[in-house]
Image 1 (cartoon, rainbow, N blue to C red):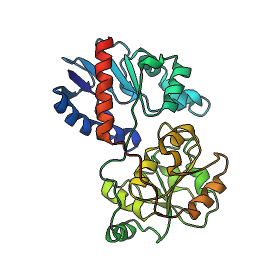
Image 2: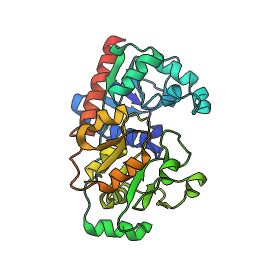
Image 3: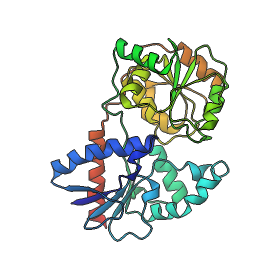
Image 4: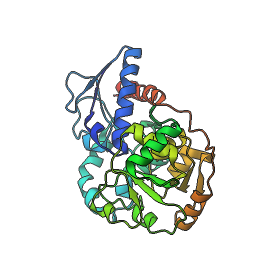
Length: 308
């Protein structure tokens, strides 16, 4: 089987970029193992199947079977807050509805797709994400080095994600304004709005090696999102031995189970209090790997070709 994979989002610094890079790396090995062929192209030619790992790459008039990864449906669930992106995605969602199969990261997103896009459950494959191999507990020397490099305090709470544009569901501004006993460090390439947040430390964009050490040195990862499709930073933090406190949303609960402390979405004070109270050792992350994800994704490819 010859698979065309749209690798354009690999350059995105947000979670969609992490997903694309990590899955693509594992899919190369999976293609070799199964005797298939994987090429990087977004206008598929001489291919048996096309996989778009983001909604922007979904084909409206596909000529071959198409698999689309749908990370969440937040713009459809919260149209008032995501009006501009919702309008932009209108045709993209139509293309998603026409895809041969959909890959979603959690059963929570699968339920949203069935409800909001009227997609047949039989066309949906739930394929979880994972922490990249770079995310492991780092040495005291590495942690000390990143503290010096980024001006981090000795003990801190951590948030990781995209800061270029404000995202209502992430609630970073509300998090920054919540009283806390420990300093708050925000990791991500910041826009001007983030630079104006009070009493926080901004690291800017960091590479994976530094991020693993920043995770390791944190007292706790705080995850205040009130809607998510998966919540990849929570898994990365656990892989680095760092406790996680998160707002109780279906997808994150599904991914982490009892590996995190959950609080009500409307209780950011409680989120901060639980984060300060968190203690190591953190539970081990889910055992699912990107190799597992690549194998399950290739299975989805085979179902798409067989059913087209």
